[in-house]
Image 1 (cartoon, rainbow over the protein chains, first blue to last red):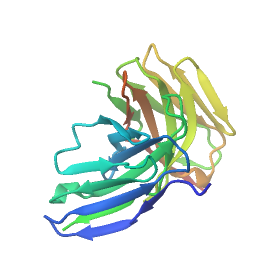
Image 2 (cartoon, chains in turn brown, blue; image 1 turned 30 degrees about the vertical axis):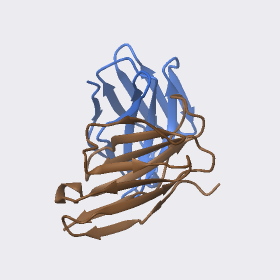
Image 3 (cartoon, helix red, strand yellow; image 1 turned 90 degrees about the horizontal axis):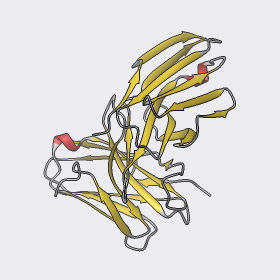
Image 4 (cartoon, one colour; image 1 turned 60 degrees about the vertical axis):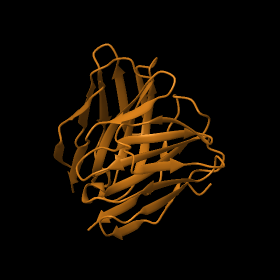
Length: 115
Length: 113
């Protein structure tokens, strides 16, 4: 078990470009979560998946943000027409069985800088 | 709307001290509460998870308590070490049907050798 992995670890882009991040959860974990974290703040919940189904989306997830988990394994988070305010650490987490009683295991994050 | 507050925002202590980090939440309808550790520029590591029906959990030098009725949790760290220096985050899981995790802003701890 290699833990949750995220790719890329760092991304610098120009305002208006699209970016896509990937998260590979721990093998066979049913739930996968995305968060955004800005400097000095705790992570903010964006969305989560139970297998391939997206069950909850935060109002923070504007129309420019989309997340997928097509086969219930890895997930992608895409940001279209990036803005400077999108600069943040994007964290992915997974948990095994799909209940509210479980520990979430976090990846190392993707740090996005929008110039 | 659930809000999670952590006090203090930052803490500096000499090595060997016992210390308490505080977390409060505004809505007692939670599934569970977790404490995490985050090192600079890194992801989060789960320390302790307390189910809504539990009062406390212990792991090594760490002890976390939960009082749902008052909306409070504390993380007690015994005999602090420089390696404990990190940001400690409290999070609650809330929701019906779907659910979401709500984090506090964290307590930045520095343990001086």
